[in-house]
Image (tube, rainbow, N blue to C red; front, top):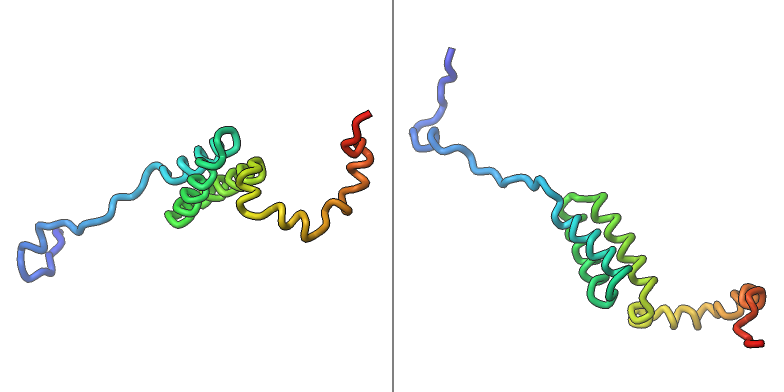
Length: 116
């Protein structure tokens, strides 16, 4: 038995409903991980912010694992770049929490930077 169409006009019957095509490749996630890696091993001042932006974009697009890995690589790029650490004020944190005194035993264990 055939299905009986429940429409009044034939125009609605002939047009299929328009759907948004689904993403088959997580392009934003690929870009996040790629720029995150380039931020660690390349010029971080350029690629680390791009990795962060694409990571956020990938998380918003539903590519959670790619976005999370991109964020981790972005954090690695920030921690590996003295320029970016200076820009976000890690030096101020170093002075504020007096890490020099906290780390003094480790410095003394490794020679403390004193030339012999």
